[in-house]
Image (cartoon, rainbow, N blue to C red; front, side):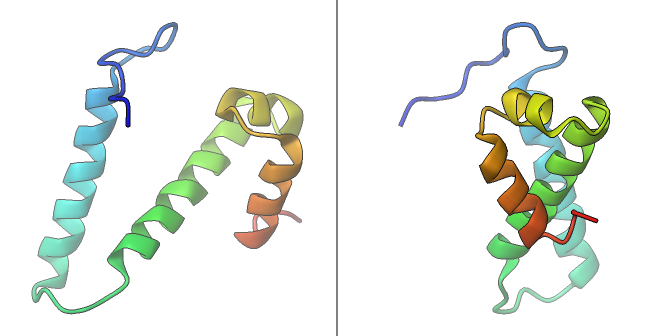
Length: 90
């Protein structure tokens, strides 16, 4: 697996900053929960991150699903399936 570049061309900030934000959010969530018990944290985190990612990308693209899919690097049909599965379509 290839490592992500430290900086993504043409975007402000760094991949490291995103990684740090995810680490902080995970740490905060685990600290708030207290005990470390068996749970589906992985699935929960991926679902929450994907929901935020899709929502914010759509806002950035002013609701244009084709542009949002292009920004995300996925097919428009894939984006629609994800939005549907997450209950984000009207």
